[in-house]
Length: 228
Image (tube, rainbow, N blue to C red; front, side):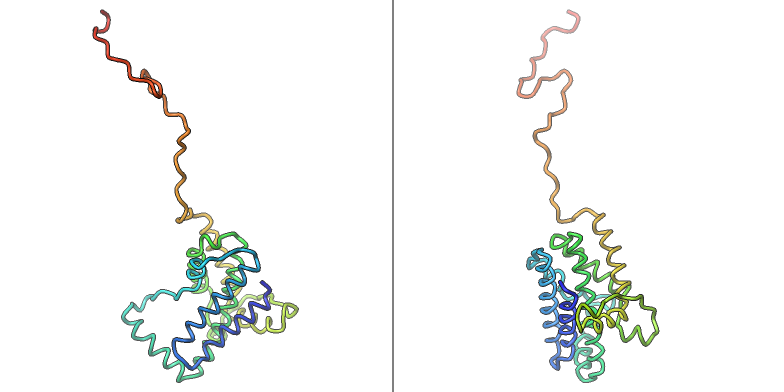
């Protein structure tokens, strides 16, 4: 998929954060990300089924705060974001950068032949790479964090440099590098969904010393003791 199309889709995802209706923004964001991943896969002639798309776009699990605390804080946070519009603008920038980076990561996984068969593991690798190496462009800028260069040329589209600048400030280059390392581990590990190879029924059975061959009856025991 052309990077200009990824940039346009990423901006659309970012604009979801400016919707004045709480919770609908998250739903629309996942719908747009699903369409982005589907378009990337179609461009590379790799079919992504519904199971793979759901794995790539599912809502992230609740983490360290615990289920009860997160369920209480999440609605308050969503409502406050709509009241304090400045935070919604920050979310818009964050979502744009993250959508662009995740589009790049899906392209990498497709090129390495890991989708759709290992979509769950690819999604886990995406989350790990983003959580450990990426972050909010605005936050990282305010904290003066170092961001490696990212070569997204203006020749790829008028919107690409803008989205690329946001992605770079979100440490996209570090995320891509970390994601490649995670995929190395995925490829080295056995596929959990693969069925075990069936036993080769045509293999010859081990010989039975002194016994009958296959399909032959066992010889009757001798009525005379040895040596008689």
